[in-house]
Image (tube, rainbow, N blue to C red):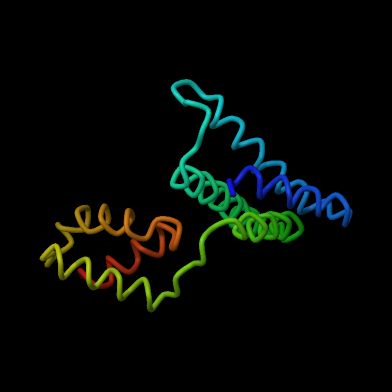
Length: 149
């Protein structure tokens, strides 16, 4: 089942439940899917990888906004952003734990023969491909830095 179909089904459930927060989150996902499908150079279909990247971008935007609001002491605005991020995360594959990310990074470092921070770019490229959708770039980067340092 495509992401768009899943979102539409969840929108129906949210409408029936009168859940305005979930509905707003789902509408933003649907809007971004439509933008991506109709953008220049797109065939009108999205691969699963593109869908995952789109969802990750939406979650990251929400979390970044929430962080900014918290820095400014606006918890009332940060909370809805975090709640929207949780709703959007439901459509992402299950996230790896920190231990699983560390293990994956260790094996990538062993396979590439990386020994110092100079090799971080090479390791990050492979790690981002292997862990796409399963862990965000910030967590991967932290694990790579800790093991290469």
